[in-house]
Length: 293
Length: 275
Image (tube, rainbow over all chains, first blue to last red; front, side):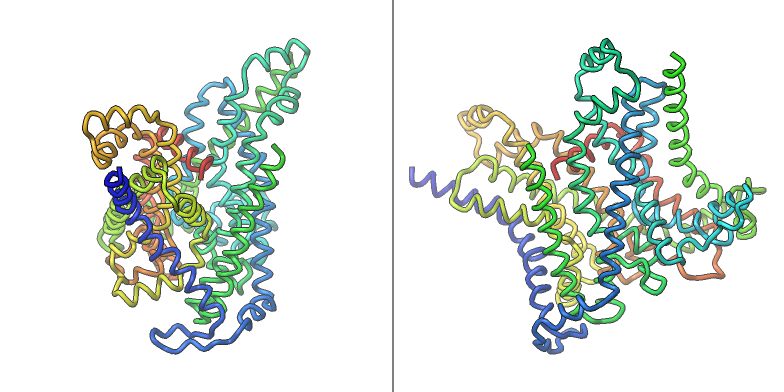
């Protein structure tokens, strides 16, 4: 018996070891190092001394209006998620689960953008939004709205919303699947019963589809809230956080502080704040929704 | 009845609208990929007078985009394989074995899912310098494995917990040890969840940007996302080949997607719901 137990222990250790080692090297150690660095001043020269500066990196970050601006921008991401992306993907989910012709084909098409890769999507839209020859301005000129044409990605506030909309264009199909999965699990006789009671069209959606999709809305909310802090690729590929840091997100700010301005200490402080916010948000979201059940 | 018709009309209208919205950027990008600069600046919508397929030759020869596609494929394929193998081994232990630190190991990987990648970029960049890992595909692959492993372990251990233990017992009676049980029996049984994770990991690796940007500085080792970023900025550039590059990088994904679209949709959904 003892021999078997020992053999079991060896198996456990051997099987877990690769995962633990990779985790320790590439997640645990870097996170620890980021926390370590966040209390120090370092200009990023390999081997140079890292001077202890207490919490001054954190006070610097919290006093930096660019940091608050970046938080505001990620707040916009979240607002955009709930106000535009949520109804849009729910609507698309209703379409692909309804009995209209070509629903399956549409499902395939709607989901495609997410497969293309963020940089390719971003680059495509950067050209489409180009002020001189971009398709968006071309359409606006064509319908006589010359006044509305803009340099979309260079106008502050407008540019972050352009990025948000492109992001939503990309993920609408993805979130559609989440809602569709919920919708197909609603039993069909519920709708039939409702129909007998004189409930049709919009009312069916209002009183059956939406309330019974609670689970999907929950998943969407968790993804949306935790995702808005993490957005980097799409912002970086479209605006690099500029011009004049107007479309900066926390993650691009962190990158710029480190690799553009060489303030590794300050950048690490942003990293620590992001880490704490990220964990608090995902635990918090889980807590909120679990309590409701 | 007329109200119902109106509703249906509205559904169709919106369905068609979004179909156009989805396909239109791809279509325009394709159109531009076969035009020259003056054709593009005249208007992105205009049908090209001559189809300049030579843009594609330029994209491959001058911009070396095919190389980036191959690099990306290599990195994402290898990392996917490792994520699955390492993840299955760890997932098996967490699902089937009882041991003292099980709870701790489990919560460690739970934290792993929540850590934002961005707060690790400075130390990882420093590590790469220290071990000569800059411009090394293997270092990049290890990083990709690390950031997908936690999720993989969760998916796998969750799935294995749902498999009847009688299967294990039967195999053990037949003389299988843990290793054989896992590789010969549980791997095939877990095919659905493995393909889910494979899709997630592959898509991640193919278009990942931030680590590719920090770790790869040698243009011949660029992955697709990194390679595409070099296009921005210059003014006197030939635009046509840039659009050709975009098309070339998305073709593998589109083909993959169309071939396995149901599997891909299922996989991404599982990843979202359980991740």
